[in-house]
Image (cartoon, rainbow, N blue to C red; front, side, top):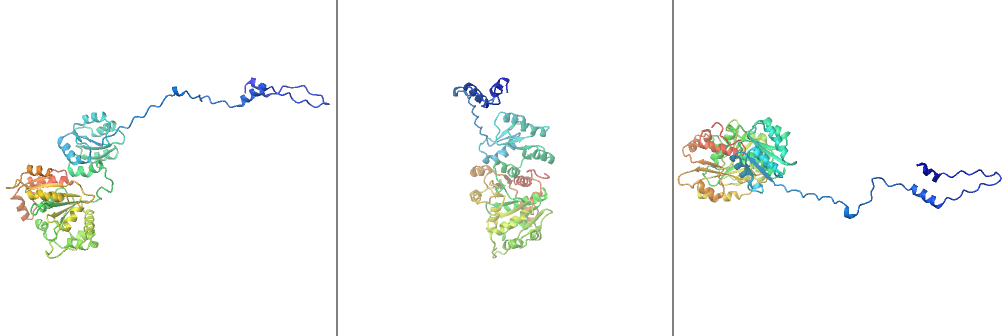
Length: 447
């Protein structure tokens, strides 16, 4: 309290009154003094409080900039071969057509730094002496939340774990790229598939069908299974989907049995032990389920029996390949529906082109790759259509082309030996097909 304010609260001292007389009442305070005291008792406004400025001088907040719409995807590849494969595999899942640019790593960084980062960026680390440092440079030019996919030359497992577990790269694939690997690892991320859309855990079921009888579906499925098991060292099961007239066992020179028909008629009996006892050994990692039932015997089974059978097989093998043939019996149709990947084999004929459209129209399950692989067998056979004419008529390109080899392939089948064991064009085409379904890198093992 200030010294001057004391005068407002202290009453002036009066001389004591005589004892014989009562003390006189104090004199009333002047009105001016009362007003001064009242004003002093009102709490003062905080010093930071200021009177509002007139509306004409109030500063308006700057409007927030509208969020920039991000593109879905952009990709970069150092070589045209990788760019073409990525374009063909991913083209239908991204809105723009020019999805992959053929540039080196440094140019791709410059492009990314000058634009708003798309939701997904695919980068090629090829040509960088320090790919780990290159990944750090990518992190500096993309916005937070961007999904980064990478391809490169390194095939080291430790490198893969480092960039995917601790450096923010969602997925990495080594080069040369294989279509099956891109579809399995990149496509679910780009297509934004949920867990229910993606294939169930376990081996892949690949089903081979022919556009007509005799086009070579059995030959290709048999050699493909042999190549994956023997050359790529994957545990493989080969199934003959034609229960009455199949020739898978004959091509491998093994004796068929009735286990497959039993599994379909009594699905409650199918378990891992049943599969192990029923399969026929055709190699260290190749097992076969094939039967040749009486022509007059009908196999009584329900579609759910095939589903239970397939799920049991996928839990046991890396790859299960099935020959659906061309007749498409009920079991063969169920195999096609439940497959993760379909392969259609054609020969250079007009009827193959006609039946291809019908086969492509067959429905498939939720876990099936929507892109069917098309194989031209016996290309260049006398009297056959040319490959260029067929591709133009179909409006699509073949994923593998096998030349006409009238001496090599039939002779190998008659001897019960896989033709893919011999070096040459047939083996190279089978290796390419194995890469397309995700079993290898598409390069022939051993030549």
